[in-house]
Amino acid sequence: MTQMLSAAHTQRLSAGGAQWLSAAETQGLSVPDWTGVSASLLLVALAALIAYRQHLHLTRELLIAAARAGVQLVAVGAILLILFRHTGLPGALGWVILMIVIAGQVAGRRGAGLPHAMRSATIGVAFGSSITLGSLIVLGIISTQARVVVPVGGMIVSSAMQATGIALRRLVEDARRARDAVEARLALGLSGHQAFLPNQRSALRTALIPAIDSTKVVGLISLPGAMTGLILAGVDPLTAIRYQIVVMYMLLAATTLAALAATRVAERTLFDSAQRLVSLPD
Image 1 (spheres, one colour):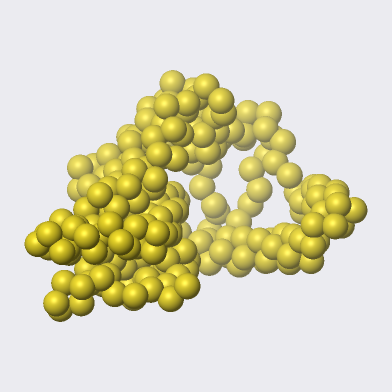
Image 2: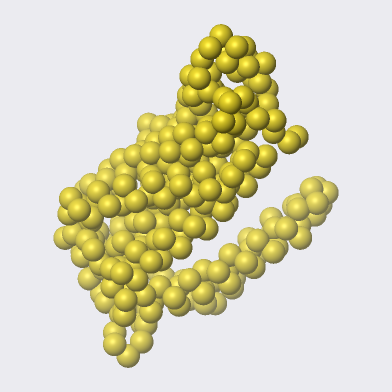
């Protein structure tokens, strides 16, 4: 697997500074320069025009999002350049931890109304990401180079964040909608965990369905990002496929672990010391 990634990065950045890969070095691939990047803003303008003409009230938000994405990516690219050159594995893991913290905050907002939603989300994302990424590194499936750990870690954290956000949102909805049913189970002598277990399982199913559906149709509807990137870098398609299989499997694991941990932690905040279901704000 490490050899796969090495093939995808045969051209290293020189010590004197970053250099664009030439067309010959990328096997005929035309890499956009900054002029091309600027020209792609026409597509953003088209989307903004449609939003404005259709009175969607999203034009300003769309333009801000596009500008923010550009600035963030340039800044992150500069940081990663330093990270890859000078920090090694410790710096890469530090960056992954930062991504986990940010992802926990984002996913926690999906569970608005849930007690300590941010904490539950962060624990879920951290649990799913650390076990999945740690397993890949310990088993030698991926290289410990920073340029490998950071993008792979980013995919894992992103998947865990999405699953955690979906699970917590469904958990809050069920806690409000199924309150009478949960309290009826409590009245029959069930513990808080047992009374809420059907709802927890429902939240888990909801969170896992998108990942399962994506895995079912991978390669049939579209080429996934990791595979596409490796092919564009000149890697043989069969080699890229092996890497993509690992990616899909690791995303399934991260999604499942993160959603499970987040819902288990969040479930405990829904009951007080007397095993009574707490009231959630509307």
